[in-house]
Structure formats: C-alpha cells, structure tokens
Amino acid sequence: MSARSPRIRVAGLATRGSRLLVVQHERDGRKYYLLPGGGVEWGEGCHAALRREFAEELSLRPAVGPLLFVHESLEPGGRRHILNLTFRVRLAGGVLRVHRDRRLKGARWLERRELPRIAFYPDIRRELLSAWDRSFRDGAKWVETPWE
Image (cartoon, rainbow, N blue to C red; front, side):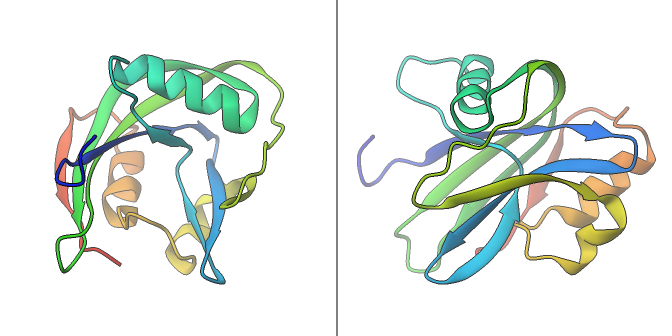
C-alpha cells in the first residue's frame, strides 16, 4: 500500500442478547473502543481478513455474515484515509483470549446501554443502535463518519 492509498479495514459485529463484542485500544494515552477487526492484506479477501483478525487478536472463529455498514474516515490534512467495512458475525468457535499488542489492551462484551457513554471509533453508534433495533435486517448502509 502506498502512502496515497486508502487503508481497507474490516470489522465484525457480534452480539449476545443485549451485549456487543468490542475491543479496547489505547493510543497516546487515550482509551477507546472499536469493533474487532483490522486491515485487509494485499491479495486477501475481506471475509478471510476478518477471520484472520479474529483469530489473531481474540482466538475466536467467526462465521462472517452480511455487510452492514460501509464508512470512510478521512483524517484532516489528508495523511490517512480508511475505508471501513463492517460485517455481521456469529461466533462459530474458540474461546475469547486477547492477544495484546501495542494498541490492543483488552476485549469485552459491552452492554448495549453503555455504548452511548464510551469513546467508540469510528463513531457509528447511532447507526449501529438503529440497525440493532431492526435486528440487523436492512442491507448495507453508507455512513459518513468524521475523523476523531
């Protein structure tokens, strides 16, 4: 990937009742949450990338379902451009065990009611809650998200 190419990131949205699987990251002393996932490597399909990221970061095996959201984040100043693809996932195996790295600090099942009160990136909380209310039955949705 050249410095002038968008980064493609895949994420998996897994729920259990009223809980959502999230990972906690930390950067520059700031803690925030996001959906599990990561970058797509050259020559790798999106579903394969999502399965690899879940295995590497969480020791989980997801069954990848439909695409829920497409959203892009553009950093002011043009240094970073990320295209995010969020898929519905069902956990098909494994035991949650976090493989910590320089940014990944943990993972947990977050209660739905907590979502509005946490730092969550990219900030698709409103769209996520709306889709959850409809049991994720709608097709993919384009979501504009500001860089934060």
